[in-house]
Length: 132
Image 1: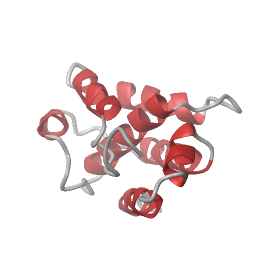
Image 2 (image 1 turned 90 degrees about the horizontal axis):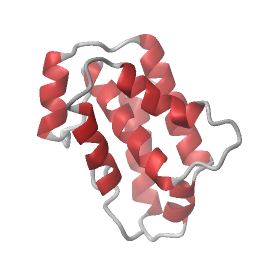
Image 3 (image 1 turned 90 degrees about the vertical axis):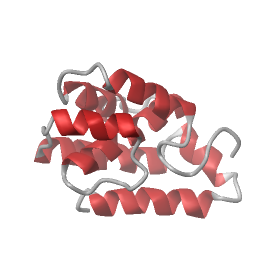
Image 4 (image 1 turned 30 degrees about the vertical axis):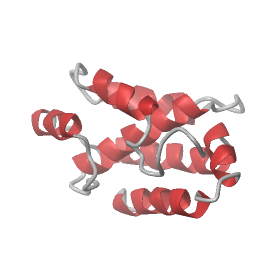
């Protein structure tokens, strides 16, 4: 797949989302990002929304003391100011990852790539850090 690496912050959509997170005053912004994915019903989930939700799920993992070593500095700074993790946010993140992995444009694109296995490993690692 072309635009970006397998990591959840290795693409412009996620980095744009991080820029928005810097101005968020609470975890409501994270929950809203995840709900776009989880409450979309059968609507087609595009790559932009999926990448933003994976970045949000990474922040949830970090709020639960299970952050990736690849967190952007801006995310680390936001987390240091907002210790707001919750079980409901964690469940929302897990639900979002499941939908992205099984029914999204992003998963379709990765399935066509030679690095699909690496991408799915990144998702499995994130799920494990979220307690699945």
